[in-house]
Image 1 (cartoon, rainbow, N blue to C red):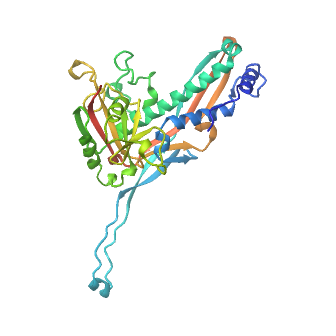
Image 2 (cartoon, rainbow, N blue to C red):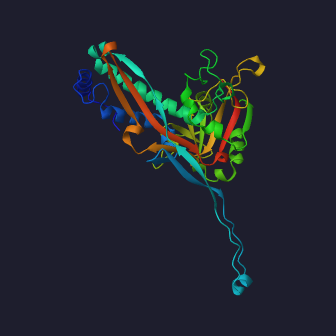
Image 3 (cartoon, one colour):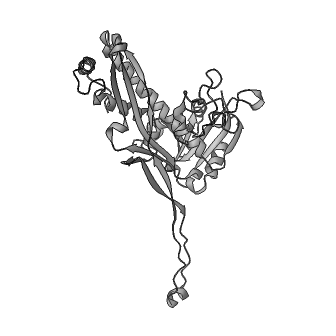
Length: 352
């Protein structure tokens, strides 16, 4: 999707809305092409949008089936065939996980004078910032989300501007309370690195996934930026330029190790305790380790609303008494994990 936009038309439409020429006094939408541009940027910058399966949702809640037990195979002997003896029956065990659409929203007041004296540059900056922030927040939510509202017990810890800026509170990073992300959902036996990361830790994580690791193409290794830098220095990392012309490369993919695709992200905190959570009380100080995630890519699920306005839109509200207008970008998204045992955390990784 092109990231170009006709700012001349956009300028006129914004000014028309400010002048009350648009329909719906005081509550109009910015041009749909602006929202489309932002959607394109978000999908490009959030690698998990192309990595994990997505489900269109026409209702707020959708129950998705999952297997809780598999079938059995038995031998069929000649005697059993001749006697007409049937094999013992076995049935798939099934259960459900629920996808529920929830909303992320922002409230952005902008002075009219900024529009009057340079809307072209302003709208470009706004578009890029909204898209970049939304893409980062999506990554952070899908990785770090935790619905625990006792903030000290949340895996991200209580928000503190100086000691824990990635923590949560009622007014800071509270979007992380929408869903339980990969870190909170993981139930595969974690790998305690306890220092410098080595490839043996990744091999252990692969083993801990059991049958979910049978096909390496179905695995993704999600690492923080400081570990990404270390991996790039390893000869075992097959970089994307060596894949060959027929290989499919996803956005954000930096290479493969043992056939497992590797993705780097800035959404994983580097002030975690050795167990992969934030704990400011340990030894009286913030810990300085990080973690990585090995996951089967078909276990996490993203839900997208089929209603275009709820997928992503920007509300526009004029406030003439304050000589400003307000942008209200919002997005509905759903997320859940089908098989928590298909996600393995590697914790206690030393930061550099």
